[in-house]
Image (cartoon, rainbow, N blue to C red):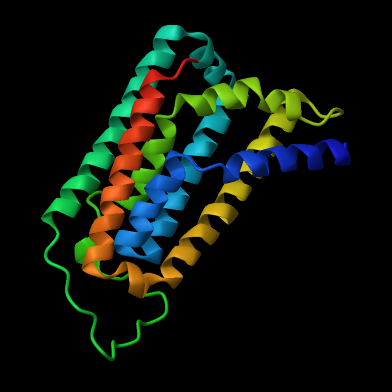
Amino acid sequence: MVYAFLAAAGVLALLTMVPGPDMAVVTRRAVAAGRRDGLLTVAGITSGLLVWGVLSVAGLAAVLAASATAYTVVKLAGAAYLVFLGVQALLAARRGGPAEPAPAHPAPARPGSPGNRSAAPPGHPWRTGLVSNVLNPKIAVFYTGLLPTLAPHGLSPHTGMALLVLLHAVLTVLWLSGYVLLLTKARAFFARAAVRRAMERITGVVLIGFGLKVATAQA
């Protein structure tokens, strides 16, 4: 059982680290508004995983995964939301003012400072992370298709699924939180107006690209 659990942890870790919409959403929040918004977005994404986990254990996600109509509705809603976030980022880059030279002796930021709140994208970061994940039907397919095959033998199906969902949530928190902290270490660089506009454009294009990919993906 221990070896099976470790093998499942390895597979989940690899899947967690593959860049996707979650990382794009977190990147925009962390770069534009700082560590606090980035971590709240991670919390929202993790909450979305737990919602899908509860639905999977209850058997409701399997209904979605098996229903072409339900899958398509959630898929298109999720794609539209990602495109919406991408357009927001592109508009924010377009509205950005001219680049300002960095001061010769910038004041040090206080530990845990949320950064420039005026640059924060609209909407609560936790809700942004939650909605982007809840509207991702691929999670339902993953949880009902692959996850049961990774569950350790010797446990009831519900217990095994619940443990793997919690493990996936923990790995997601660790990976994305570490990514946020890495981004915010370079906060002074990303705070430059020209760099911020460039990052908004990049993340906007990436989010729209992921939205189109989700819209055209097959179950």
